[in-house]
Image (cartoon, rainbow, N blue to C red):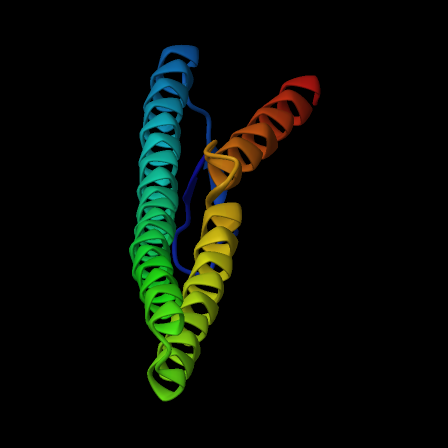
Length: 140
């Protein structure tokens, strides 16, 4: 409602027509829906980036694990050939690569967990709060 006040007098409330109120409500609902959709879009983009990063880390860990397996195979070949110092070095490198792969996989898994569920939770809760508020005001 608009308040009209003159100097030294209390404000007088100007009544709006039903048509104006319906128009104002339609505008506000439109802005509200647009804002909620923007929020959902931003939230989904953020979760998508996090999921992509986590998937990239898991892919990277697979490549590192492949190198680790290659080193372990080279270790077995060198061990069979009888060069003790060479196979021990290959075993240490292979084990270290597998540790790095395991660590990377755990970090990637954690990132993927944070990105799920893929639903825009903040936007959904905000919309539910808006619906509750509208229902409460409609009852008054």
